[in-house]
Image (cartoon, rainbow, N blue to C red; front, side, top):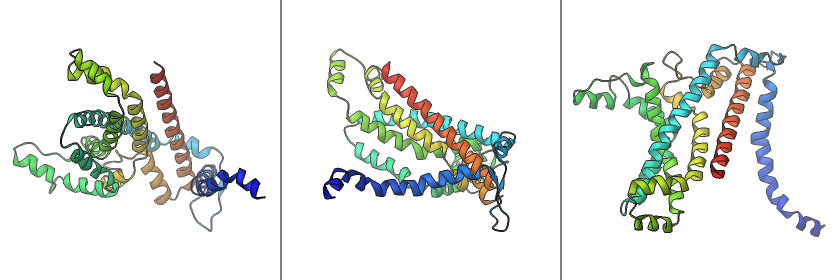
Length: 291
């Protein structure tokens, strides 16, 4: 008996983690998929009603859902683009510094460790059209003020600003970790041949960092797709429902309208969207490694 256990001891060590995963992830996922085929308003007195795929068909006829899908994808793409450009640039710049690199790393960690819902509330106060610090500074220097989060014309770039402030440090630290793993021999040979800093970055650093950059983009894409805290604490989907993403729409349908079936169906579609986009990014990553 002891010999049998000894041969399979790795399974016993992994069993608690597997059990926790099944309880915390697999069961809620299975329950959500099951409830997506029912109509229920969370009432103990009203039984669940089987409706088949009606919830899914209703979603694609719902203008709010289609708008939420579009906003989610657009927000993710734009935010990841700016975060990547800024994060990679700051990482390369910080890696060139002989002094102050540690201070920059420490400073960049601060947005990452701050609770997202607190970040949303702070930026909402700073962007307040009447008493916010941004409009106060703009007015003091004679520039026109902005409505920021309270106007449909400026709310999207305002949310991108918040996302970039929070998300850039993550990409920056990942890229800086990749830079430290690169061999110095390539750089020494390039400098001996008379290459400029820009040529070294474009011809050596960026190509060698491509796998690291791809990993950072995948992680940040998933993070931006599931954004909820920032929108909940800063705009709550407004103004005029212009910033409702899939996560916030699911929340409203479940906890405000008590439409469990519709919320579950939207969650399944959301998971499929995240899974599909992740597979595409992984495929592009493998393709870039081959080429």
